Amino acid sequence: MADIEFTNEPELETTGLQEAIVSDSELKNWLVDFVGDKHSPEDGQVTVEMVVHTMADEFPELLMAIAEENWIRGYQQAIHDVTVGEKLIKEEAEKREQEDDTSESD
Image 1 (cartoon, rainbow, N blue to C red):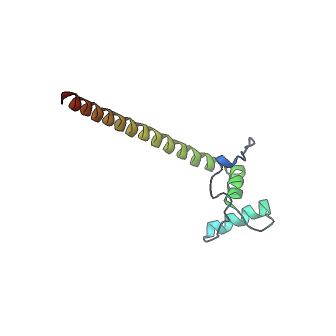
Image 2: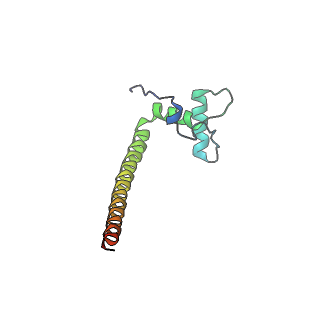
Image 3: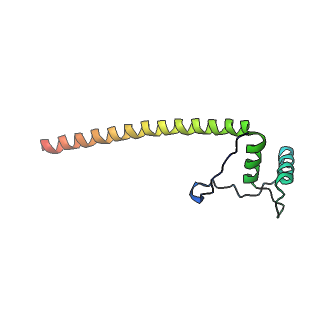
């Protein structure tokens, strides 16, 4: 597998990566044990970031599917936002044009 390089730039960091995982289900218990064995954290706490790194190493297909879906949804949202923004700008321009026409006729 190709090496995955993670950036360590605070402005790009996702909130929640440093949170310890609460094992409140059978799957989480298994995953926390697996990741804990792999990373051997000094404080015994397995974080979300450790799980992400482990999944990138052990099951990259899952993370790629999630990333692709997230990218597609983000792209769709951006297109929607641009469309709504263009509509609002057009409506505001028409409103100002009507106000200018009304004030000129007075």
